[in-house]
Image 1 (tube, rainbow, N blue to C red):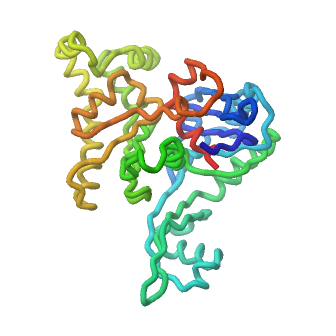
Image 2: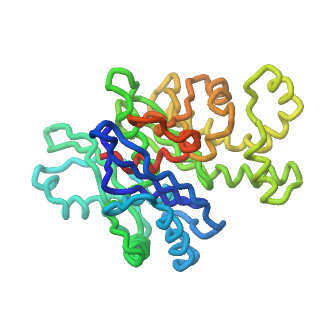
Image 3: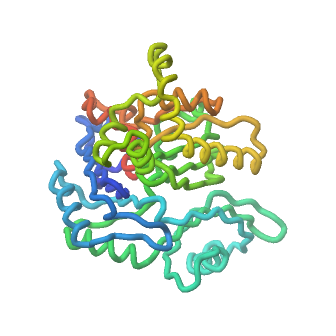
Length: 359
């Protein structure tokens, strides 16, 4: 595993900020987790989507960031920032280009801007990554991953961090680096590189589909932890804070025989809280299978705070009839000593922030 040790990751979510950093292990052997910070954010402070990203108050977000920075245990040269997936529009684009066009970043940016169906008048920054190139008679057939984000949003965040004396080294989407992290932790011959990454966050569930190591499809589902809490409150007639506590303590997905028998009495609650989410996942998976002619779903890896429900991977394995695993990259960090149990238990939550540190 090859990680940045000179920078720290700052994963900005709609419900929390996660900060993660590692130091070199003694004698250059592996890494030591220096920082693993999970800092909740006030509801509604960070929200919105690609066309309308919302930071309700720059001063309030700066205050929250200042608290996170104050908890960092070691000095780093700068940070790599992960944005909420809803703020970044990803496009998979096929273009046929001449060699000089491919080598001109300005031309390629212009061509992508014309190709992408972006709202009129929206000022965005476009970045891209070449996924594959194939020689054809007409030229070079290029598979390109293009990402668009509003320019004013980047200016706002850069200014906030600059005012806090933090040098911004790079910006990425929160979950895009998780696949790279998965590859880093598995030798080539032990990982089936056709798989699904499913990040269950606060506002959204982000599904990314990979074939032979390439991202081929993505869908953002507008159902996740926030909606689960709302539905628990509705079903159990609880206040939001009580519902949040109940959601975290309740065993919705049975693991033992006794829990299976007990769950029979509460299956209506399971249906009401998770039924719509499961339907949306099912629609997403069936569309993927139809579009790409896939007979059987590949293995699914879960990340995000809302993936931590006990028994969820086992339940989804049965529900979708394919292996489902909670991906905990923290446990796979090569370290000269044991990793703190509390940090290890939240490994799936910290997966996107650790993914930002992959070189």
